[in-house]
Amino acid sequence: MTRRIIFLMVAGILLISLVCVLDEMIGPSSHILPFVLALPFRVIFIGLAFLAAFTVHRLAWHIAGGLLHSPLWSRIFLWSSDRLKSSRLRLEVTEVKMRTERQRTIQHLVASTISIFAFVIAALFSLSQFLSVGTLALLAGLFTAAFSLGARPLIADILAGMSFIFEDNFDVGEKIEIANATAKVEGVVETMNLQTTIVRAPTGELYVIPNSEIRILRNFSRGRFSTAHLKLKLATVDLERALPLLSALGNDAIVLFPNLLEPWQIISETGQGGEHTELTVLARAGFGQGAALRPHLLALVQARLAEGNITLVD
Image (tube, rainbow, N blue to C red; front, side):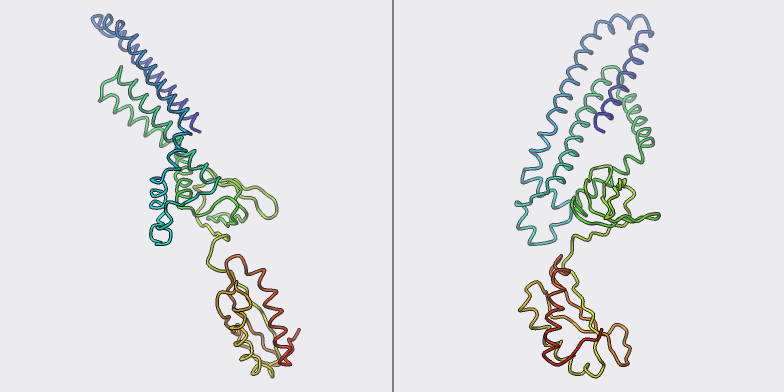
């Protein structure tokens, strides 16, 4: 993307320069000789300006890498992503380690910005050799308006991509769900860049999603806890004996299973009576541990109810 922008910029500069040269040459005859004498020096200055810009472009990746590894960048990154509200993260500000894929994307963004900035300065310097400040400002305004109008979808994708990268809403390897007005996509993030996010669906399809199309994002890989709820069906005659037993077992389960965050709660979702009653045990486990903890909780409940001569109903 950076090379295409630079190529279009250089082509536009050369075209404008050619028009300016022709305009000068067909002007009053008294201007021809000074213009011809000054032209070689102007060309040399333009060549040096673009040589310097090209040198900065070749070094942009290394410059961006140095900036990303500096303590100053860590502070700027945390501030921009609104993380300084946490005192714990504030104390660890110098120990921030970004994931490899995300760091590479941010480094590419910074390097592209440095390259474009260098060539813009070279272009403005080149045009200033032939145009007045007023004409230069007018051309810059027209070029900016035309570029913004023609590349509006691209700019929208890039701005959205920058927002996702700096706010750290999701990362490579995380399971997410993306929704907008027309579609919903769920899967694991394989690649993210400034323009698109690539998601692998559970059924194997690969979705390439423009960043500007991401309206609602659901991240399954981040959270404070996971649920490990249980469904128990008991005979109603055993309900009075089972409730205190299950409540006491909730306190014992915290000692037996460190991944259990708090004593569970027992509710009846339906509130219906009869020969049988269905209870729901609401348990919270450490994030990502719910599925693995649930079978152990079932085994514990089954064993403790059996000790009390209480049988679960099929």
